[in-house]
Length: 214
Image (cartoon, rainbow, N blue to C red; front, top):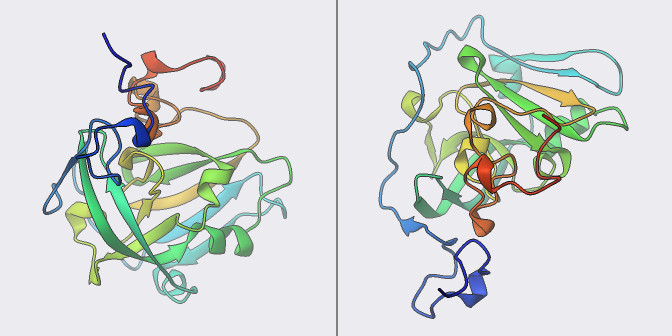
């Protein structure tokens, strides 16, 4: 057998492949709806966004729906790679950048990871450097249109460098952590790092150091 796709870099694939597509991915027209569990009902009077855990101030930060939408806005152009092997190319995402949240509610110096929390207890863990990337955004709009509720309205996280499960729909909070901890899908067999260019789909592919101590 030849070199495996898992070990192959994007530059080593066939010349016919779109260089924007990670190994094993196919281009997708439209945006399929995929999620676990029911779609939550949005209640603007009680909705809030919180930052808690190991904050620099040791205090929790909170914005209500109106206050969050008054925060500085960012727009990024980035691809979207789903672990189910479809990719949407050249998408526009607008909302509040994760860097803005880090500036307004800074983490303590020893923070290494974040846990992003969503409705019904869904969660996704990220290294702090991935969260702080300028392309990571808490999106309210896709391609100039407000998100639909099925796609995460009023807020979903977009982390273009990773598989899309690392960007939860219906986000409600960010927890700053001093050590890594697996999120919802990571506890159910998905890879802790989720790099699409390395096809890090499942936990059995993990190497020493890829995940927290079990």
